[in-house]
Image (tube, rainbow, N blue to C red):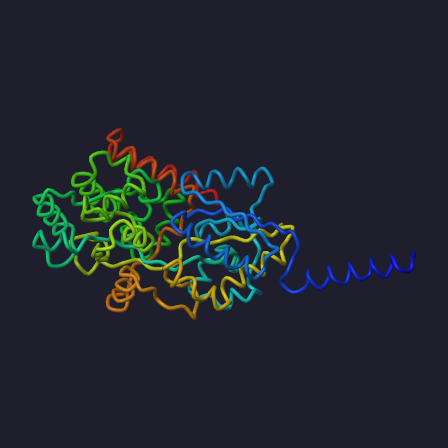
Length: 416
């Protein structure tokens, strides 16, 4: 009997080994806590497809936009590190480096577009990448072509003076020229980077000067004059209650034709806008940031990094999942066909949407501005957004706002 029992136990171990081999695992759960809720449906579809491939791995997916950096830091400080979490690229790569796995030897690193992978490497020593991207991106202004046509505007304005003139014509139709998104802290960084990227010949060095307290906003006309003029235009010709205009309200106002221009957004809102109004004719352009039309260019790159925990209890299963995401047939097609985003991989194709198509054409024709938001951390950008909200709300003057931003830059990023 003992011999028979031993044979049976050996058989069970062998069978368990077979089913646990390869990419399979029994009862494994992976926790994924990321920002970018606009891709929630696409991520859930990805997870459902992976469940068909590896049924014994469960991926617990959670997403939020509001206060994500603070919520993430709370989890990290408590020792509850998600298997996959997110941060901005660039400067913030080092902020979470101690929690992140170096993916240099993984197949997905070879599949990534080199310029995207470079944005996830450590600024201090060049190691990495310490992350991967859900998407490449185009940042600029989305506008309603039909409203512009009704107002007699044949092309999107490329200067601040032309923008103000266009706002007056659109307002005469009884339509709000802008919906601002000013209730979201991150909208301000998407807006401001167009101005910071052209404020000097070396924007990365300029950001370093701000971090060291060696620069003043008032010393740079592109920032002190042009950026604040643009913000004032959005406020003057925008939402009745701009600080209550969150992402969902901005999308609704734009999609329903209540506003002609969506501020601070990009390719990520096109799908949701078309779900509300399939007949929406979307135009895409760079920001008018001066009175020189040559300066009006879109921004492109990958600003968000998905980080992989270096302390995961299930690192093999975790790596199997993210490599499948980037290298399987379904994974490679997921970017354009499911998420409808600009693929961050070399074998991707542009999705059949207006913002990616127009963005690619604009970059090919005119080039692009630098993606300066990755030069600073989200902790700073959150403080920047809050300072700008006080300005928009009328509780702080321009000079008070500039002084606060300068102090926050030194206090938050100057110590890095």
